Length: 493
Image (cartoon, rainbow, N blue to C red; front, side, top):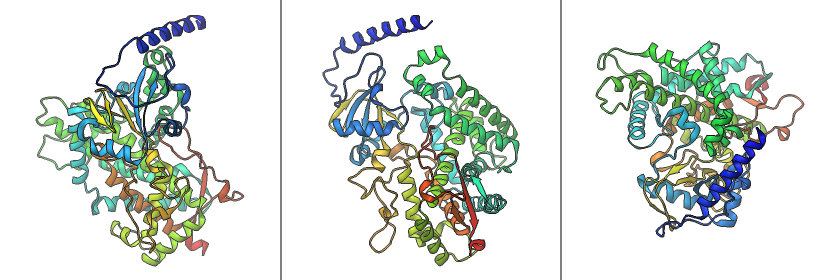
């Protein structure tokens, strides 16, 4: 079997070599420079399996902020640094609003959903999602009240540990449950079997999506299918779909107009029951949209809150200064509200710096919908384009100390909070994160509420310097699994 596979790879390599170098490029195309690809593997030998974004930033030092790399036979354009990324995301309009076909997500979503779809499906799903989230109170008092309710449930859980170590991942339960309440019209008890199953499956899927086997499947789908590299993640995705189908059946409302929309599922179902001649909201796409919101809507905010807590343990002086500001502005026992953000510039700066520093989602590829002029090059239609967000959040021309955790990046000389144009953790332009407003609200209220109530500390015998902040391998740059202690501040005093 092994000699046969090696022979097949050799023949494919020869075929790829002849195809690559025997075909004259279009005279109109002006590709950015980049490393010369090897047969079959392209430039994969130059990219680390984990933290590929760091490898790409190293290549940018040699080839400039806009360059070409090959993943196998797939040629893609990489953009690094604030200026190049901003031009692509904001300056190109719809030309880079699509997604390239990514093998594993093509299998999972078949071109549907919100995050990996393009064209009319994406536009319809995005418009409905933005409209529904606004209608459910995102960015206003109704959702703020839900967040504070969830904060009380989370603090009740932490109080049960009595200051003893708790798993860091536990902090992700609250933001996830807030998303579930919006999606399904109800929050779950933390012991609910459905909640436990969903949280476990989301965790497994995110870890599997970041594994070398899935990355290999995306580069060589034919080989991945032969070796069944995609089966574990598809098996777990089907388990998530089964849960979503049961929740969908439970939420299926009467005909439109008889019941108000109380959840994202309600809105999707009613849209499908109305005029939908193109079938954009048939049941499979309803499931695809819900799956996207479940996976992406929970993972990003949950991981960010965990990172913020971990960084507070790592930097106790920063944590102390946040708590001093919370005590002065809110006082004891007064829960934060969204409007308090303006009166808490240091707390706001720390939360922004945590998002900048961790670079949670280094990049999400785009696709040229037509031949596109970009940074002086003509990019052919269909080319994948990677705006490297981590290179913006770590851009040495934009940040004074990009590799350090420094809340001063978001403060002026008088201690006032300042917005920074290069703060793009949610991306920018037409495909800016659909849940940005919800994520910002959740993170501020949960982070401020936790630090108001607890002193976050490493477990006994472990110094702040010894805490591990090396990102764990996953689809996002999530924090490594470990334990922290949440000591009630009244007890501490």
